[in-house]
Image: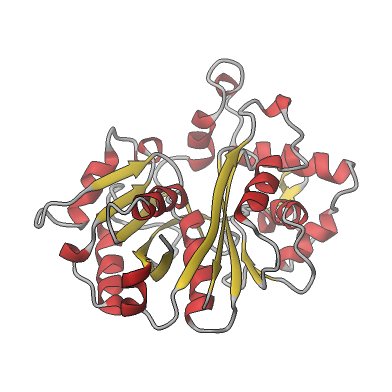
Length: 328
């Protein structure tokens, strides 16, 4: 069964919000925007799936509180992934493909400003040999960036060119400067998927998912070559990622955008991150799903016919998802 993205909405990417860590305040307007755009109501959604993190929210089962944004009536079929909501979209895509439902709403949210994000992300590392050392996320990315520079795969100038950065700025973790790192961002987004017989009723030009796959590399930083991304290569191959005109890449650091371009073998004429990407706004557990939504928007408006979206999870591009969409 063919499945398409038929709607996308997101909350503003901001440095800090006054709302709670359960995301309800951010999600309610996002859902309202989606329903207004598609003409759907809550009772029309066959399956709900979310992505967030108890570690980030500092509470157990934080996604349960977020369900308040949906409402108690009517009862819903709901699921959750403890990672970026791009993987929730994968689960929802499978749900529709099996024929169990014909619509699904996927959402992700994160209040990154709560606590110390760089330290919190150390909790995703190996609990025996790495996490007790508390290496923060930027430091690990700096190790990856340095390895690539030393191997001649990119340079500090090439990294700065990704965002128009200034090499005269000081390091925050050699060789990373502030412009090389995604900002701490609070935010949320949501996507609606629909089966083929519903999709054309909801949007004039659906973004048909022609391929989607995700793979994972070793969780041990010392057991893999950090200058490459085999899981991205494998996911792209399985998803049939050739011939795309535009790519939205979930690269929270400038050198990772270069690395992903290489892994996906994107030619110079492929438009990359026209939305600004995570370096403009990086809401944890929503930024990967936002890449799918942003790429789908380019299909909705007819500006591009074949697009690619990428999402990552874990340290130093450990796990990667590739989604290819087309307009027909």
